[in-house]
Image (cartoon, rainbow, N blue to C red; front, top):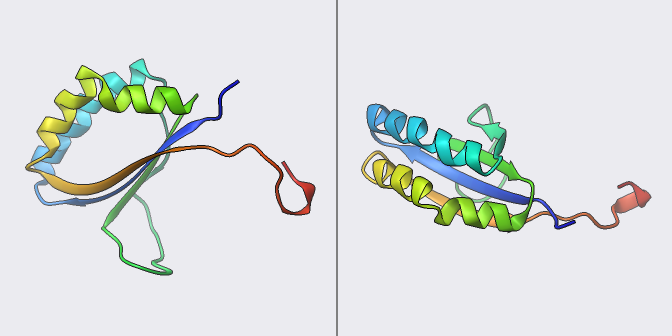
Length: 105
């Protein structure tokens, strides 16, 4: 089984109404690719570096699914709605399922 995949996004919304259109449009590709929100906004503490006002972490069953979702026509359409409503940083990263400190898994 492949390791899970994650989208980690930091977002600064500049047009809330436009961002809502993006949010509504991204529901289709997220459902299609089995996305699960682990973090969707919420309180945060900036411990180091810079920040944007909104943080999002989305989990997929695999790294391949996470990449495929981003490149899908459905998500690219949603993304086009976001371009004038927010600016963001987004990385797609493969999860880790190896040894942990103290032997925990």
